[in-house]
Length: 244
Image (cartoon, rainbow, N blue to C red; front, side, top):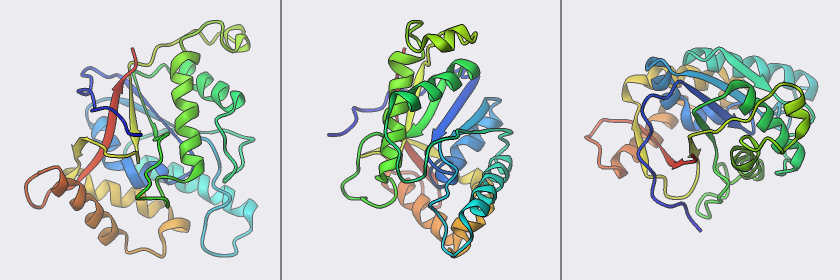
């Protein structure tokens, strides 16, 4: 199973919401692209489902790691110009499923922020990349977010408690999936490479053991080369679907 060919990206986007499973998911796959949206005047917000307490590479106490990873995520967001970062509570890192509760909480954020575009984890597994993009939490958040986009966020009869709280239905116009199979919408992020590096380095607990510049340049060069961009360019790739 794969995605259909991407639709052309919509113009005139005012707000975009990034919904991801863990602190650092946005930075690994999307930070250069988001920096470009910010430069274009798009208001971007992040919703992170877990606090990343199952991550890390040392014996840092889990409660301390949770606090640290929240701080790292806010610093990483600031590096690309994003000021609004929210975390959900009650969802354990490593155990996510696209439950009605998770769909409701994502729906609430969509109705509150009212984005034109949602960027999220792919709900489709990449069999050639069982590590990373196909983490079960990523797949679960991609599926839950897809269900929140349609039908939940636009259906006034879904989760009536949200309507009672004043959260009116909202139609997301477009969804961007990161980390899925055969991404074909390529974004040249060469001019935003430094900000992507800064965002990645902000996640010290997760990237301190990496040569971040080499890691990022190698992967973004491969994406650009595969897309036929001129030599020396760097790119991130997505699948873009219309949701109106």
